Length: 264
Image 1 (spheres, rainbow, N blue to C red):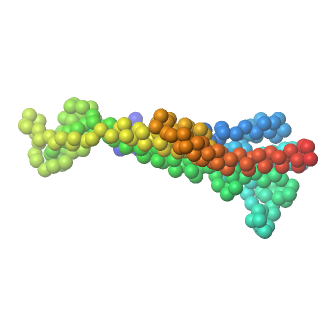
Image 2 (image 1 turned 30 degrees about the vertical axis):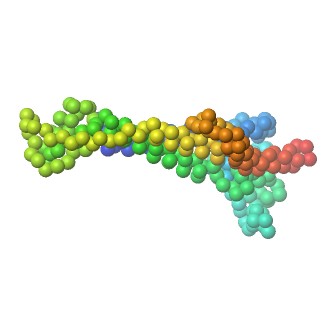
Image 3 (image 1 turned 180 degrees about the horizontal axis):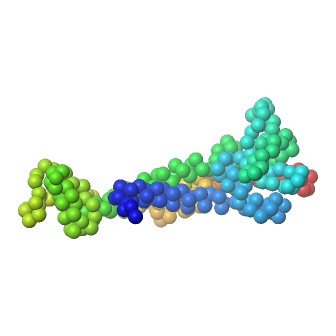
């Protein structure tokens, strides 16, 4: 079995850290809304799939297929645009299904007024959280390994082994002096500052900023006791505005679905 190198292990940890933050934020973003009654008319999983479409593509559609009945699917604009820059035809699609409909024969559903997928913003927030978490990790390691050993290339392996005996971690090694076990070690202190508390606070601020974007009340828990009433009200208003960006297009789609297919 091939042994994983320190570099490969760090790459795996980096990827796992980013993926973990991304998946957690995606889970929140795709669980914000529930389409009541949709699974009953379009099949089990329709509500979940519709939110995934809106999250990833920024748009979706509700259609009535001649054979399969009601479906909630991905939507690609097809043909030319009208004067309001909406497509005259919609290509509804999913795994094993592709069909083009006239725009008036479907309900076109937008994630927001810009048809902007939530995914792009979540990717940015996940990257910011990953970078902060990685910096915390590096700063923590600096507290565990505050000493550098000096030597040349010929003695690097010996220095690494000696350092692993000292602390169990892989250090940075540099210099030009010949090193032999038993001889005096030339050690340099790094004196890395302890920044973890500030970095953890920054990470919480990034997380709360993402929740605000999603329209979720996060109460600014890191500094709630220091906020004045006007600041709290202002933050609540921003949260409502963001939430409305996602809600109003979904509410419009619900009304259109009901009017077109069920109660019109």
